[in-house]
Image 1 (cartoon, helix red, strand yellow):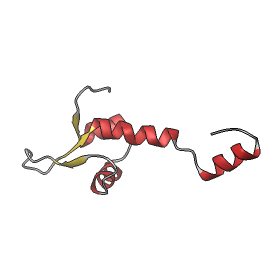
Image 2 (image 1 turned 180 degrees about the horizontal axis):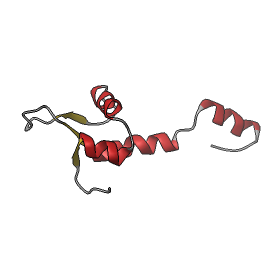
Image 3 (image 1 turned 90 degrees about the vertical axis):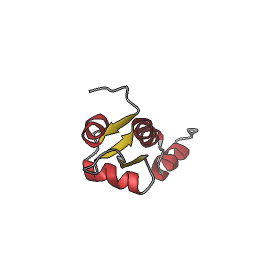
Image 4 (image 1 turned 60 degrees about the horizontal axis):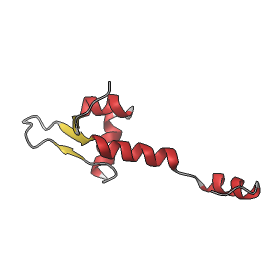
Amino acid sequence: MLTAARWIKLKEATEYSNIGKARLINLAVSGVIRGAQDPDSKRGDWIFDRLSIDEYRDAQMTHVGIQEKALAILHGERI
């Protein structure tokens, strides 16, 4: 399901990102993505910033590891 909302609930965030509930909460608590318990929720539901999830996933896709860099250098490629 694609969504245009900026702030999404935990269930929608897990479907959107394909990241588990506990992992999303841990990422938010550690400051990797933006998320918090919804101040308007009496049950303490979590909400997440969709754009920060996108940035997190983008960083994962574009990250070049040390081994990849070493192999590229050995093959004469530029990174």
